[in-house]
Image (cartoon, rainbow, N blue to C red; front, side, top):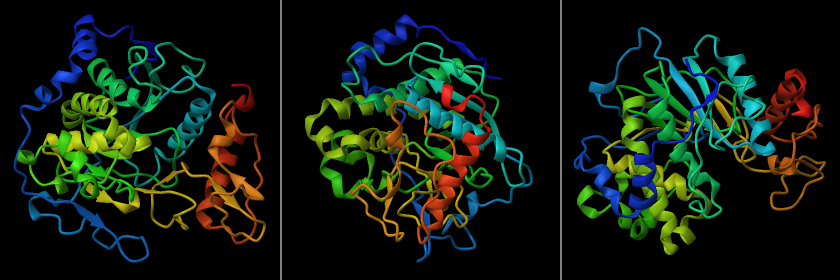
Length: 368
């Protein structure tokens, strides 16, 4: 089991290699890249944003199998010690506990990977491992660069009982029990509409050379949500870290990819290791754009939800009614948030109701 303690500083050798060698060593980490692949991306989708009966479309027969027993995965998310991160983690962990043991769930253990370098007051509430942040100044204000480095340290130090890992984020809420969506050893990911490797081929080729294969080998995903075998993630994570840093170092790439740079880096790192993902639209929904929960498993509340009192979306303009996590940067939202007006999509109403249930039941909610 994961212990709730500070694992201490990273090894000096690893830090030296990391701090001084990342700019020259990116592709040294991937000398064992599989250069030719016989599989392709699959997206299970229909015109209504749902899934067909077979959730994995055109999957080769050699990776289709009936699951006769559970294949648990470990839930892992990276976090900071900022109030904004803490309250989201508390809500996320509440719903993990609520769904973990329900029929259909294959959730195993849980770890908050805290990359602040120091313990915080949630150590006894949420299973946590403390890891080091990047050396000062290396993230250049883009704190998400700490995510791959945090996973590298966690995978090196932690005892993880499960064979699979779900990489999640603090602003995820489990709306249904989540099974292990991977199949035949292939990881499962969520296709983001704004991750477009083919449209950015010129930039992608800086980090994924033509000799590695077509740019379509780079999946339209980020690292989260992804369910992946632990041994695969152990191979991908150092490359993900180095590609992230090299992308941030390149002005054109940094300007083009912006806040999703680290997501592209994970997709490229996976491709460099010959790993592609089964793409699952039912993995997650993102209010306010996804209107119904349907058969999806995770609510991702990254976007602000702004509506007038007629229930009409006013995105880009502060609504008469709104829920936006960025309204609570310095502390948690109050208990019993007002419900949205009639006409607002089910996905938004469900999100607010789930936040309210969690905050009503988490002890000392507004004092943390």
